[in-house]
Structure formats: C-alpha cells, structure tokens
Amino acid sequence: MVEAGLAAGLAVALSYLRLWRMPQGGSVTLENIPLLIFSLRWGVKAGLGAGTVAGIIQLVLGGYVVHPVQAFLDYPGAFAALGLAATVRKPLWAGLTIGTVTRLICHVLSGVVFFGSYAPEGTNVWLYSTLYNGSFMVPNLIIAIVLTYLIWPRLKKI
Picture 1 (cartoon, rainbow, N blue to C red):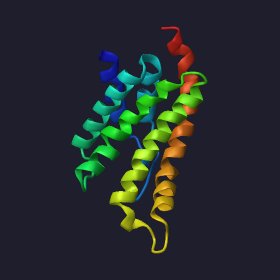
Picture 2 (cartoon, rainbow, N blue to C red):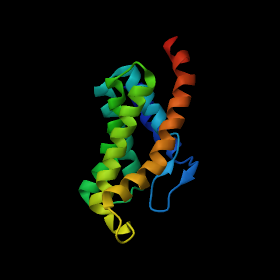
Picture 3 (spheres, one colour):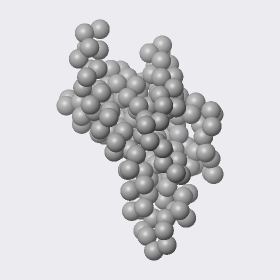
Picture 4 (cartoon, rainbow, N blue to C red):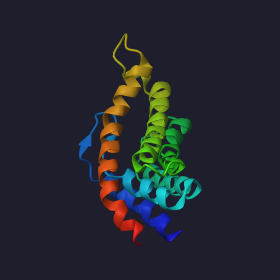
C-alpha cells in the first residue's frame, strides 16, 4: 500500500511538470511512468487501485469537470486504465502500450461525448478527439517506454 501511495503521489506531482500543454487540456508529462511501473510490479488489481487514487487526487486538486461521467472518464477512469499495463509484462513496451492506449480510449470517449463542440465544423468528432488526445498521449507513451526501459533493470534488482 505504501508503494501504491507513493506511485499515486508521484504521478500527481509529475503532472505539474509539463513538457507540453494542450490548449483545451491534456499535457505531455511524466505522470504515467510511476503508475505504469507500479502496475508492472504489482499487477492489474493494484495498478487499477493506485491509478484510481491518482485520478481522484488530480480531480480534487483542480480537474476540469462538465459532467460526472466526463469527470470519471478523464480522471479516475483514465488513470486506473494505466493499471492494465500489467496484463502483458513481457515485452515491457507491450504492457505500457496497453495501459496508455486504454487511457487514451477514456479520453477519446470523453472528448467525443463532452467536447465534440471544439471540433472544427465538418470534422468527424471521433477523428478530432482521437487526434487531439493522441497528440499528447503518443509522446507520453514514447517517453514512458524509454524511461521504463532505463529504470526497470534497476527495479528488478530490488
């Protein structure tokens, strides 16, 4: 439980160190990494729990909410989804991709249902939401893969 709390807290702290910020929400950060690594170490159930806690903390500390379902999809649901990284532990990149893509799906659903009005006129809202959310989630995934491959061998020794 201590490690879960540390992973959730570190994820929230890292969310404030934005490498790139999108105009209508979403950022390139390092926030996924502690939750993904925790999930790989302790499994899906623990990863879902730590991710949910991190999402709730983010929501309480200043989440943007237009509807309760959107709040769930963009915060506890999206961060809990990172726990699914533990479904595939080898190769590491596959689990990291599963967790991150599942988080992306949560954001895309939220974008389609609640933020479709931001799409330029005539643009398919599914395409718009996928491209918008993918523009920060794909770099997050790439960074997570690179840093996890650097960190993971050291953690396996512990």
